[in-house]
Length: 212
Image (cartoon, rainbow, N blue to C red; front, side, top):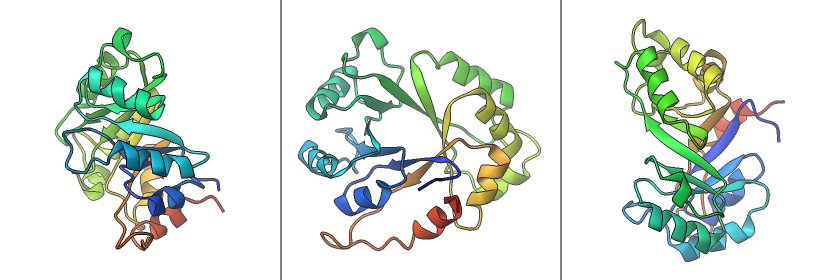
C-alpha cells in the first residue's frame, strides 16, 4: 500500500489500531513513558508487537530519563526511541539504533530561529517529530510571518521531519503538497470495546494519502 508520505502511527494502545496501521505505516509508536496518562503497560505493548509485521516499533518515552528509556527498550527489544529530551548518546543502550526527537514549534517563531533550534539538536537524530498540531492548518497556510507552510516546506527540505499536524480529509493532500512533507504523524484511537474499533476518524485521511 503506497502512500504520499511515510506514516507514523502515534501512541497505539490496542491491537485493532495496530492491525489497521500495519499494512501502510512506516512506524508504529507505543506510549511507554511512565509519567504519561496515556501510557500502556509493557505486557500490552509486547502483545500488540507480537501481532505486527512490517512497521518499525517506536518507544515513545516523552521526558523519561535515560535509565527508564534503556530499561523499556531492552524489555521490548525496541531499536527506535522517541524522546523530548537531548539524551546523552554514549549512555544509550547498544540496542537503540535510532532516535526520533520531538520538538514543539509555535506560530510566532521565525524561520532562522527554528533552523538554529533543529540544527543544534540534530546530533544522533534519525528524525525530528515536529509538533504543530496545536496550530490550525488555515493559520499555517495563510501566515505571512513566523511559522508558515512555506517555512515548513523549507524545513522539510533541510531536515528529516515527521510532521505532527492537525490533519483532516479536506486538508491532508494540500498539507503534503505545500509542505513537501516526507512523513506524517497520525493519532491512533481507542477501542469501543475489546476487538471493536470504528475507523471513521482515520479512513478519510488515509484514503487521501493512498497512491492509487
